[in-house]
Length: 497
Image 1 (cartoon, one colour):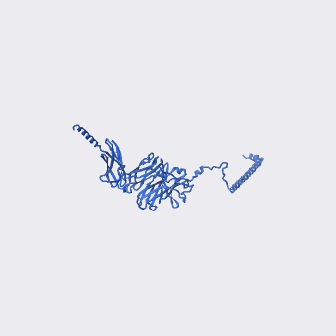
Image 2: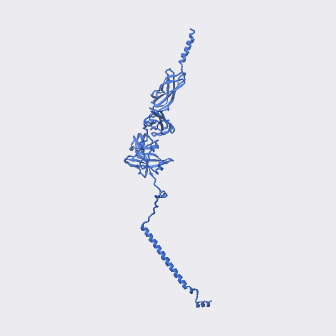
Image 3: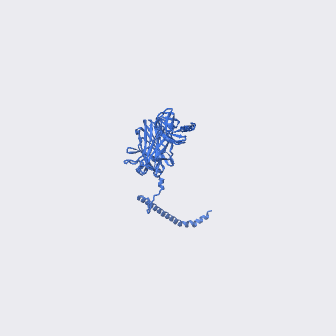
């Protein structure tokens, strides 16, 4: 019996040791703690195993504090195994359902072996959906292998307040990646005025070399207006349906897109505009569309207004706004609208820019660039002013009573008199320069006048010569009497004193 005591004690120690394990360390990561009612958000839970043996089948769960302020969209994924002194993550998706502040989120983890742990994060705010930002994402539905395409997001501030410090960050997974060589993945939009829409620069996306699905997600966050997380799936490995960049131009009225390429387009949404007020939307694809801002003043309350710009073309039965030879069309732009009509618009102001290279190449008068609007079957030249210029562009603004098809066109410079005088006429080789002809009648009159003048001079010369000869003859005849006085005259002079 005494011999069994050490064995029993050792077994107890081993059993006790096998049943003891260190608790998990649990941490919670969220993209933001400023949440929006009914806007789903992804939560990452990191579980660390500080023990000396592996743990398996770790179940992670979330709970709210002080109340259950959210619902689960996707339960937290089960962690199959965590090696000793290692960490693994679990992803969960929740949707806030209660508006309030200072909420907390609690995550618990438990393995099949009974090891547990928990973590908490607090300071979470959920705002009403009516006072939150909205965001929509634009990207092609498919792309070729190893191709590049653009992705963009439009962020709209709440109708009741500005969205301060808005920023947008794009992530890509699957068969694509974000090319950050020219545009960063994270962009700051600053403050977005209430009810208006802003867009950061387009992101450059690189499709992979293998077929698959590319998932793009943009996390949009504002300090006071919550979050939005639009996403887009792109099928990689098929013919691309993305919009391509093309610009118009050319003589008389050629402008617009061409070559069969899909037209570039961009859409913006305005949450609401009150009667008598104006709202402004900015467009980022100014390199292709030339228009970069539209301001709309309305006669009545409107909401959910959507404005879409796209590359337009000249209708087959319509003449260009400027005649060939007298001007050039830079671009045709189609402006489409939803949830608003021209009858609702009291005034629209459109801002656009024109490359100075185009102005110089086409000999355009910079002061005579105008925006034209197609109304029915004819073009109306809108009142257009140049607002500013820099080394590359001239910027213009025009007022319009409505939105439809527009054309940006310019009139050519008229040659100045000094330019005409400075440029001598070149004669074809072997030809003599043209001599200005004088009418025959005018030539005859001049000749007669010249002959008469010559005749008069000749007669005058003869008369002067005859007179001179006569005077000379008379003087010679009278000379002896004048020189030799008579004897009587000599005697008379002698007598007188």
